[in-house]
Length: 389
Image (tube, rainbow, N blue to C red; front, side, top):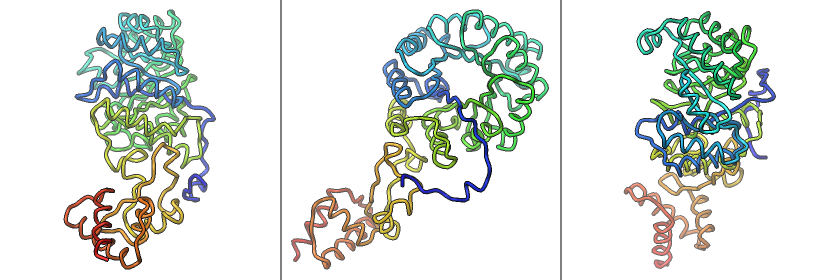
């Protein structure tokens, strides 16, 4: 038994598509995290690990940004990955030319569509935005690219205008349109409504690109798929601007374990991928981060440890090996005899029952005094008590 989840999950009848596309934007939106700048080697390593994970599409970067950016995007595009390689562009021919120079398979081209973006950022009219969309999609399709058109700030855009601009993208041959929740301002109920409204009029695939300002990016992504979206944007560790994006590892494992939708990803590489991005970005993984955090499969409480030793699924919904993690039994003030005995066995140490009780007491005392009980500290405690006998 690899996992054991609530049987109530099956009481709700949900229909997921047989196939969805996960496109990962760690190398583009993830790198837009303030203070993050991946090196060429970082980008190549992350791209290789994403491809090993079997990600469907990699948004490799924003080629027009710099020559170094173009160099890394081009290298990724020519690495021979199974994943489709995309570049981000504005709705400008020169941006699309920069992407073409990188040999990418396709582009995501974007323009702001909400009134606040049109008025205060771009200083253009709605018709101007539609014209930009038309020019960019036509130009990119004429050059044989896969084209996704993204409406920036779509979740704060008038629905009728959103349908018009997506309709124009579709008319020009776009392969997919993207809903960008640029400020993370939509609820699961809101994304459900929006996607269902759009699929009534849009005949090409719809993708969701959701930010995590209110901690809803993953559930909004799942809700969007249930409503009819066929593609989802993610980043490793959920990095990105402000509160970040939908977390790749949380989304994939929630879909796989909780909803029973296995889309063929090699989840055993999740921890390696997470650690790689954490090191490259300089952004440490919180200990309580779902799926990849250091504490996710660590147990200290005596009551918990007793149960975990006998049956790990008492306190774990799935086994750590599924995501490349390992279970850890941690000694501290909450530890009991069974946890200490397990650690003794691990260290190949043998003590009497009386010594065991004293070791437990000393472990609790040492931890309450602020000392972390690593293997060496534990062995010192055992050695000290054994000498007393």
